[in-house]
Length: 353
Image (cartoon, helix red, strand yellow):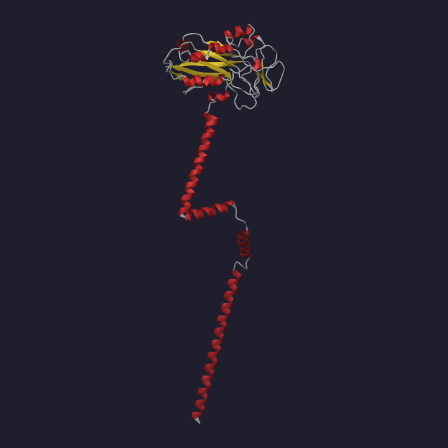
């Protein structure tokens, strides 16, 4: 009887124990599930996807991804690529060096044109042009005289220049288009359709090809021609004050009826005057370029007026400085189509060996 009761108690105890263990296990699982759910809810609440700030940030990121790339972005991408690749890096250095060299060259040219270059040294900005051209720096004509001298290149330039003036005189008593007219005896001037024939006989008598224009004997001639300044018309003196601006010898010529504009040359210093050895000779003798040869309008068969200047046996083996200039009233006027005002002054040197 006792054994049966004891067994019943033992069985009951085991059942209770197993039941409690099952309940505790169930409670533990429930607690763990609750803790897991609570953690997931907390994480969800703090997630940027479910918060207002997070939603804004996510929107910005999406907009940034959707926004087209700017030039800066492309540059940044290229820089990143150059930094990560050695070949690209070397290529970039070469290209950058080339671009830098081009920029520096451009700056040098701009500085030289705007600052360094003197427009008076540019023959295109002078009223007068000299033939022959200088063959040494500082506008110097240098040669050796004598039959075997080094003057032939200079006289060849003069031959070429005078070839047009040696041609047959082309003129017509009527005003026919595109011809040279004999303007000596009629009161007409050059215009778009005609140019006046320039009679160079007096110059040929002073400086002839037969004596090599004086270069062989050391008495060279230079020819000072109007430099074809487009549209310029010389303004002549209209009153005594303007006449008094001329040098005395040109004033005398003007008072005698020669209108000008005039060409005149003077040595730079007293030493240069002494080395010249005597007065300069001119052809035409009145040193003028008559107004009938102006304006130059790019006419066909235009003949630029000129004045020949002869140096009569100047000193040898020394630089002689001379300045020639054109004399007119309106030489300081700004001429349309010219950035600088042309200079009326033409300085040069002669050196005879």
